[in-house]
Amino acid sequence: MSDFDFCEGLRRVAAAVTAAVLTTSAAGAASGAERLATILVYHRFGEDHIPSTNTPLTDFEAHLEHLASEGYSVISLDRLVTAMETGAALPERSVVITIDDAYRSTYEEAWPRLRARGFPFALFVATEPAGGRGYMSWDEVLEMDADPLVTIGHHSHSHGHMTNFSASERAADFERAAGIFEREIGYVPEFFAYPYGEYTLSWAAALEEAGMRASLAQHSGSVGRETSAGVLPRFAMTGFHTSLDRLKLVLGTEPVLVKNFEPADPVLDVADNPPLVRFEVDELEGDLGGLACYLGGERAEVVVDGRTVDVRFGGVLPLGRNRLNCTLPRGGGVWGWLGVLLYYPGNDD
Image 1: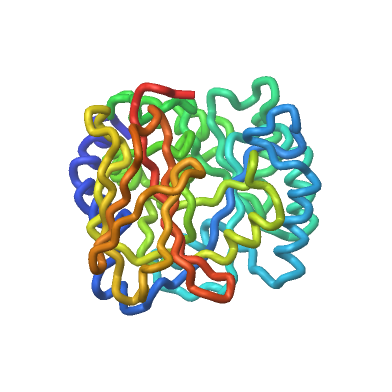
Image 2: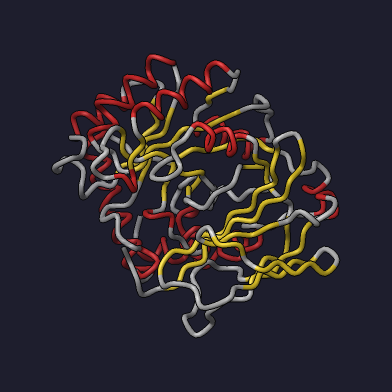
């Protein structure tokens, strides 16, 4: 794929993706907040010396046991995306497991446990670090690719903070990785995971035009009929979020039906800090009295005017990634959950 094609794709479909992300149509709202699946994301397993991206093995085993014993249907990413594309039904308690970065602990620890359960999963590989210290070799990636339970995904070449790249730089990175995938495993994966979960709507549009059936971020939330395949939310199960109680919480979430979300793009101008976050909540969501929003664990001010919600912050937001989570109780342990990335360039960790 040429750089011209990548950028031309950006121009052709950016408007469509902008309309889809964090938006519901009147027709879609008729089905209510239908949850198709919850996507979980892991990185390292049993690498306790790197806690921020690690899942302790005892916690991971508890997750798998809970999914099996409580009757959840662990489905492939392909099956979820196909249902989004065709309108096909999925089991009511569907879960998708994804793993980013292809650390060796995936090969040594996670894969045997998932295979023993018969659980499918997607593995996203960044081509530059692959084969390096602490990462899976290409022979190991190829071995996993031969397992029908495993879907290999595209995770860029450099695994850089690509919202800071130009469109041509992103295209070059994508094409370089595509060439390596062709050489090492014989094809280019059709699913993409944004490094660090950082994205722009124009990049999502370009990836769609480049042939990606879905692209996955790292803001929290479950997937519904109206979720954009270009920016799929995932719940992180790493760091401070690996307990069984955390898993039970996220499995009880549903999408929140919103429209007219501002700011439309997650990458913000540092001159507009703090940002004004505003959105409208569909009437099917009922009373908004229990709506609460949190940024970095701190509760934000929520002002509700009819169906319009303003989220206000007490001070400027840190540079880099900020993840806003808004929750709406629905009873019976079920929560409406809206997760949003707010990104200020300037502090890439």
